[in-house]
Length: 338
Image (cartoon, rainbow, N blue to C red):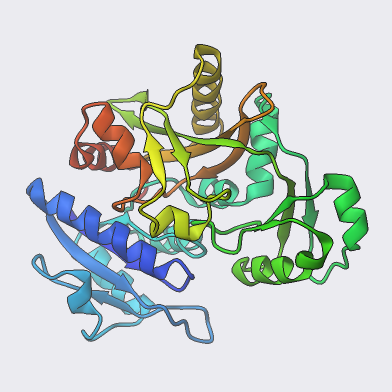
């Protein structure tokens, strides 16, 4: 299989995507694949299209930064004609929300992971919350705030209480997410979250202190495999972008310390979402084990989880005795896009 690992892109997660894509490229080459770096520019033109740079089988993403680029139309034509399959290493809008998947499908270029509709739904935090609720998941109380909607500070605090969490509806990697402790901090948090959502939508959510737990699922030989759970223990109170990607003080525990009942509930919901939304490849479903006790609380769904030095999916795979490269092979075997 002739592969191109797609990284970069126009979202604020450009740098994280390059970390993921470089790791994936290294793993695939180590397993003997002819894998090429495919860099997507950070900038877009007036038609919301990026420039694409395709490397050879030896180049990395750093070398492509100054390489000649092509238009999207020309690049997709070359990828199709030369028989490439795309391994998507993008994060955030354009990569995780179904946009690039639609363009690849229209051009007849196969790619890894979930299809456009499943990707869009999975990245939308409100829609994925609704999907989880239909599977009888416990979720935190929330309120959807539309673009330019005036939200009285006191009213929102009365409905959800302070502190509360403000987050963009469609973004990842904790970009634009804030823990708001009082009404005076609300406006700045709303502005930061709106900037990360392509439509300016914001989710205000009840803050539930507890331990975050990640459950990763993938399909191997036609059967769903659930990897060991990973719990996250940041040094600070809130698991923000810095704690996720930069801090060496964040501690991870794999397998996570949970009761049998909690583990079964988390695994049931992760499997249920994977099937119900017709997902593909490896996905990660995040939960909170509340300090107050009770059932796990569904947080969000990640259809293109990270593969970096701090990423939870490779960590869980290693705990299960699965090399990250072997996991990537399973993702490639799960292709269903032409």
